[in-house]
Image (cartoon, rainbow, N blue to C red; front, side, top):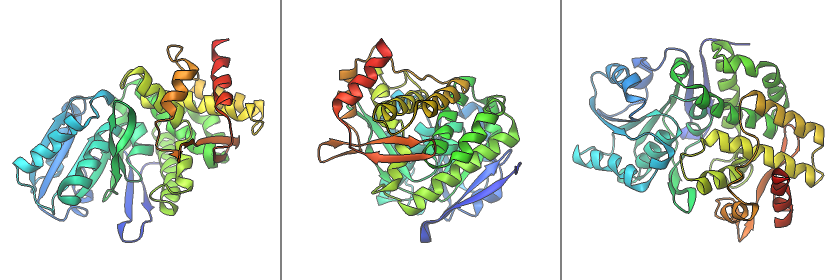
Length: 363
């Protein structure tokens, strides 16, 4: 197993970009300098991350015309109103089209900063500096940006690729245990959708991830990013196989929306969603019960929830799922499993199948 530092590449022609992974790289000045073309740089972060890393990052950017915005922390603030604070600062400081935005934080900060970069003067550069495991393995890679709406998660946004991703594994040392587990949910996803050997590695090594073993974390982040980079390179705008990355997300987004943004961590909701997807796959006779047992066992070992909230009825869940980016011409599509490492995108199920599957959790 490789340890310490790795560099991967997301291959998208002239918009290809590197992912730098390793400890103590957040304040590596040379990484930023090679990807910033203008002088104006706006750092966007939140109230939790700013006291930990903002000054270090600003010091690494010495010599640039710097500004920063500190937003409130939490999924409930991933709104157009809060996003507007980024645009306000860009306009107030008269930032030009060759400016660069830097997202310093988790998935919420990355999504909103990326959307601001996609929108400001019809598109400016941005760099992702993810500080949570979930953002390092998932949301910082691939160019999906956006904000939430009361009626649906991530329904407003754009595809806009970063110039690079700088994933400093040392930042995970300040992450609380619950947030760390939440990130592992997205790591498990990569094993489930198309990487059986990685899933098997996780079965043997999830305890190392929970104990923040540097070598294990670098390996898991690099493997996850490579799996995602391969899919994004082949299907950047999610017209086909990229939708596999949504395993567990349709159920998970319904949980997040139904319970109120911020009540469930994104990774927790996705974990429960993946467990539900496995159970539904068994009901449809696509996957055997032993495989479902392994999925649930690994999620539990990662200290993740595997049941939907009882406060949401099956009917309410189905209603919320109908407001989803994966609905095509009125038909809901789900990512389900034919086995571990073998996922498919399908609409070959009945609403009753979903309801009956969810009812199993109330019996």
